[in-house]
Length: 169
Image (tube, rainbow, N blue to C red; front, side, top):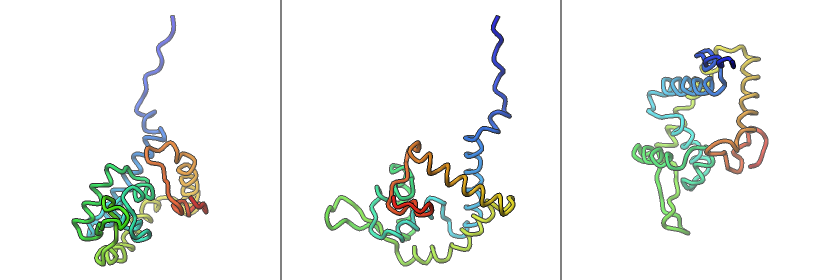
């Protein structure tokens, strides 16, 4: 008589890479929101603002590729940033249906002001690790993200977006 397979335990769940990455993402967002609470900005909103500053006149489809974020969800992010007067949408000269995104003066000021808070959040995320372990973790995470890019629902697709790896898109 065949034996029953062992039931899956919570220990198996708690030690699975997917579970650990999801929990770490929750923790990273919580730390970011806490450190940046004075600015009322989410990590995706922050990445969007940085991308729009870096690529003035970017459209939403390209923005989605640059920050690797689902295009359908990005619309609400753009609406919130526009409502806060951090960005403005202007029709494309070549195609009036396409809206191009630009940082406003208040958006640029926000990015300038929020930098110390973002840096504190990033430091807090890695703070429990020894400096050598931080470097190792970042190298391994960068490698994993790069090697698994195509498995993502929203792969990173942008010239220069992988500049941290020395690639050109």
